[in-house]
Image (tube, rainbow, N blue to C red; front, side, top):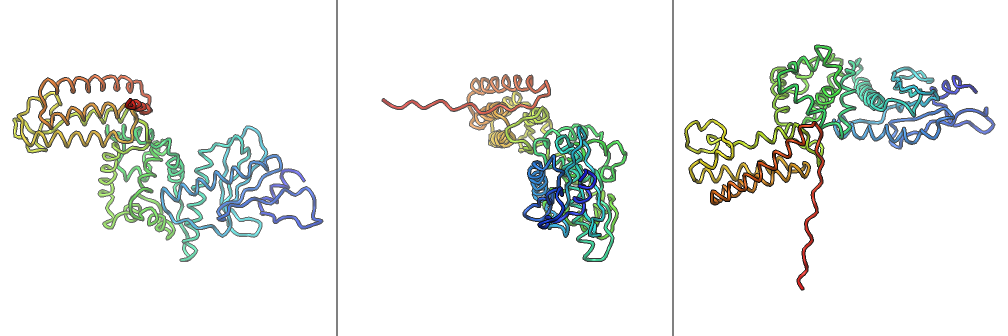
Length: 395
């Protein structure tokens, strides 16, 4: 049986051949235990069925954890076909009738050993979301709207935890400089150039999927009811007032707060180092410290000249806590610098002697300078904590 005939059998999801049936038929597809996927292969790639099935199911579980859409096994498992081409990175995703005449999601990997894994992951996410929409629409007799390609691609990229920190930092850099359109334009992906930025796709999709309520499922529900994707439709699904302007404010607040989140434990990005620098100011007005120009942030060196008071002590203790919280979960280099500044602030809160305070601040500033020099090269820092010195046993 030639390759074309084998694929024809696979597309129909042939059942195991009965005794005496024609020899040469490829083995039947292997199916995931929960019924989401079936993987079929030509003879040359039979050994790849299990790892491909594992990859697909891992992606499905990641999507469920990240977006909580409430996935259910489809009536017909998503069919993944493994060809025997050479040096072909394509991933072909279609929704078409199978041999039984029913609609089915199908993903073809002409060359599974060289397939683009990002494209494959996006195809899996897109297929699962479409199955969700069609199943929901079937219960109401409606025709579902489509899922934007950028949303499936963005969710798929968001599932790769190792990319989240760098993607957020790249988008934050543009957002903080006012170079991104309003979120309504982003959701429509206008201008079209925005749609070609994988990091922006991932961050925007992660924002939509990671809402604390069931907003993402509500958004899918509107698509299942036939509402075309638009910024207004997204706002109607995510907010009771349906206000795109309020949704834009939510996006800005999320971006502003997200810069302090630890997206990659044990790592400190160059952006995180710059944000840490912003914590090295104390604003007297925020703590009730009565001085001239209380609205202006004071460097820690300037804080030494503030009059001793209960307000100064409380401000120093609060700032030490903020610094420790920001550094928690990041790499050891930043934690060491944060610890140095926190010790200075603790001493300031305790009204330590000026000479001791100046020495603690000098050590912290020197450590920060070394940290910033390393981060200036653009590399993410991943220093591991140094082991604590062994305790000497008493003789």
